[in-house]
Image 1 (cartoon, rainbow, N blue to C red):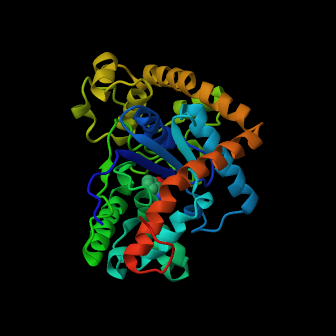
Image 2: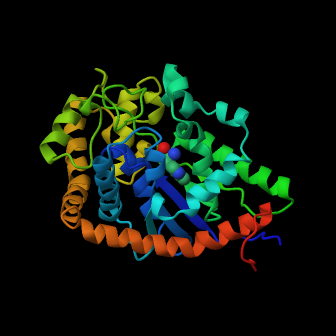
Length: 342
Ligand code: TRP
């Protein structure tokens, strides 16, 4: 009853709440595209059940889910190469999530910094779902026996929890059933910061729209936001070491590097000595060149939401071929009566 070899399988998810930002694209989607291909089976998910841990307007949620799917496809995720799903159409995520609620410990959950940040001062009024969020995230990953999970820096603690849940499950039931997942955290712009404050992550929930580039912004808006981005009066240095105490400058260099598939040091080798008055227009030009084909393709796809829905229901079917047997096996391991699993 033991399973010790796992097919290399990539899983990752993004919340469909609000629009897509450059942070989602560079920190996540672009890397998802790079992982597509021969080495792994890739599964990418719009985590709608995670989104409702804080209240969402139903129509806006439906729209965000489809727009995120359009964003994935426009950025190069190919539904013939990757499984694209929205979480709620694959019920085994939530079912395994319940089992993991019974494996994870209160003390583990209380240490999660994202919960503390999101719940803020009024934690008593946060939903129970927001508290249990990381346990559902562990289920998202482990219901596929995923081995590799590309995420941003801020999800590291949740991935450690996923490993703890897998290890405790395996230990408590004396099995080697769930893999110990590898986080994949890399890339110059893994952490894209706000254009107004280099110490804060670029976020779709920041009240200032000038703090982020949205994937749906037009060329003028992109150029304007970059022109207004906070910087400092110094010229660019010729290597990254010179940007240690200059978070805003570092962020813009990281963004340039990620958009241009270069290392930040390679960018500075060329741009060192330039003032921001010269660098910003180059960055704006590059951003428009890379992002506008994506935003126009997203707009085109959003004219055909029936096609998006078809892709997601096909994805759910493919996903369930993987998740249903893993859930059935899990239920058998923990002692649920059901049909015999081989
Ligand atoms: N928690 C992730 C975020 O906020 C989204 C997410 C949900 C996820 N389930 C996942 C990421 C599983 C990777 C794997 O960004």
